[in-house]
Length: 160
Image (cartoon, rainbow, N blue to C red; front, side, top):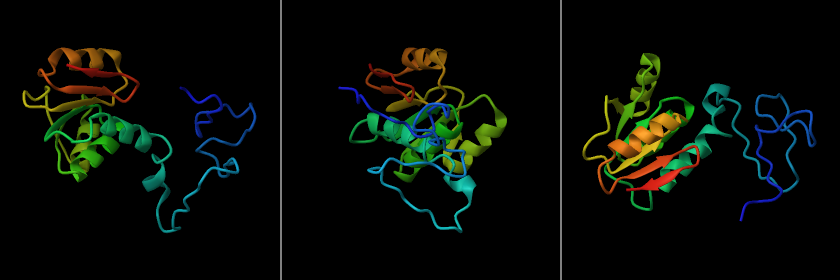
């Protein structure tokens, strides 16, 4: 069942109550029951900017691969969600390939632990689309080896 009173911080329009829930504000109003984690002052803003959106989205995508992560995963897209996904997978010891058309993002993906690839590996045990492109998801489903789990961080999970 979908939550009836869900408030996604960072996704609400500022003109609507409860206001001040955006993540680019100097101050953010939290509901009384929302837990907060205070980051140390020495942690730069750049290191935390993805935590309210890209990081949980990536974590949901990685979790959707199943309880046992495959040895090899191809990630499509190396924006904030893609690089967060790559970092989580690489940290777990997964061999990660990334398909990303933009050179600067490919370099970022390498820094996070992925090897740039031109196509989905024939031994890919999982594919995560972090590009948000319906065309990329369809291409991933078409190219996926039999038995591969294809996950879209934008709401689609497809088992082959």
